[in-house]
View 1 (cartoon, rainbow, N blue to C red):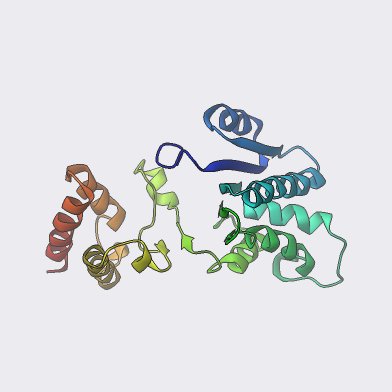
View 2 (cartoon, helix red, strand yellow; view 1 turned 90 degrees about the horizontal axis):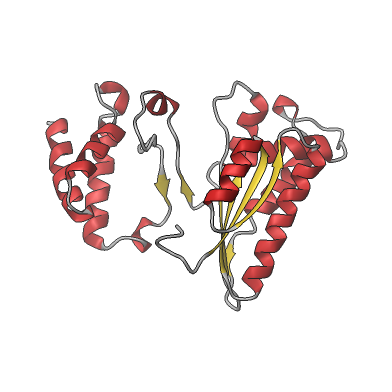
Length: 235
């Protein structure tokens, strides 16, 4: 992001992270980093997110295009679940309904302002942790973003990078990002993946696409060759 769009103002909000992760982020990111470590009070987690969001809003009002990275929505939701006054109601997993409002307000702040800049928010959410509370937070935000990128623990354990579940990942309004020819080829690839899911193959679609990317000379070359490769798999 820093390389392809150096004009963008980057802000990182780390909630309940490990101290070494915070230090590494501060050293590697050319942007502002707001952080609270896992050993700090939940009030600090909430304050960190609010401060980062207000900083981003002020930059947007001054005409800047801002990208705000939040890690993670899950830990932020947990913090507010403890910090907010009890409403007397409890959702599945022990979640107070009122505790969901601040994280939703945070994530919903992303927008493109006609008389200012724009704010893009990229947030992570934890899944498959064994906690019903975490599952509830994820389900509350599922489908609310313009893009979802699903990471695959199985691919990461096998050291296959990037460990992305391509079948579950996607972007809304792809037609605004790709030309008609490219979009048509992507659609064909998606249809083949849907017809032959990864669990029915020895190699996942991520592995196949990574192999195609390694051998391709360009994105267009990859799409052309990958379409033929996937067609062979279909046959």
